Image (cartoon, rainbow, N blue to C red; front, side, top):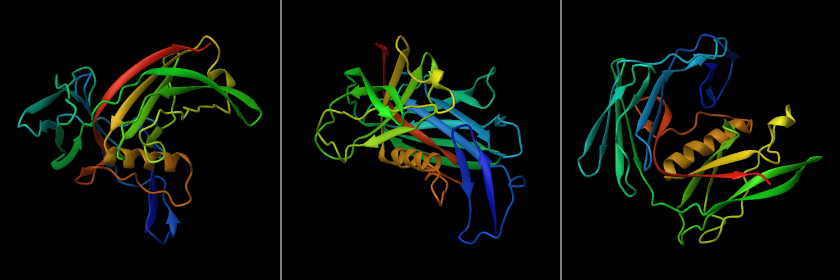
Length: 262
């Protein structure tokens, strides 16, 4: 069998069998990619595209005219409509509620894809604390998100960081296995080895979104960090979407705070 390499908007996907005979970087068939989000702050959004081979340009074909619905465990149903100005992006006025379970159904190109995610309880993001570490021969300015993990294992977190409105590509995700019930002291460490001007500097405005995610989305995000870390035997992140699509569906809480770096 052949090993195929796809470039997606969020990561690199590698598909392989146990015995690799040869490599084909160009002829792999496209797959549906679904990225769905329900949170407690903004309208629900689902983007649908297709994967591309490594020889293609970084343009991911949008999938239009899909049927996209989200239902909750109370029987409420929401139809997501495609944005006329952004093909492949579907949205509705659904604002999620912590504790509810949401089921996504996508019908696209004659196939049906489903996924389920339960929105965890809110864990309050109290503040952002500036810090500094030594990384190689550099002193890096970093951020510590301050929050208190509730007692009892099972809480999972994801952090989205922006420096002066520029998204950091790092995947920050962890659970409470090593800090159950305690105040967080883990840092968001970012360093661009090729362009030091992109690292955090005094006066930069740093924004951090904290997401409380369920265990299945946590597992998917850990898979992304494994790929980004160049694991020796990379595989697709374990998607919670059935039907053969790549991607994930996440019902999560969201909080965002900003800090001007001293």
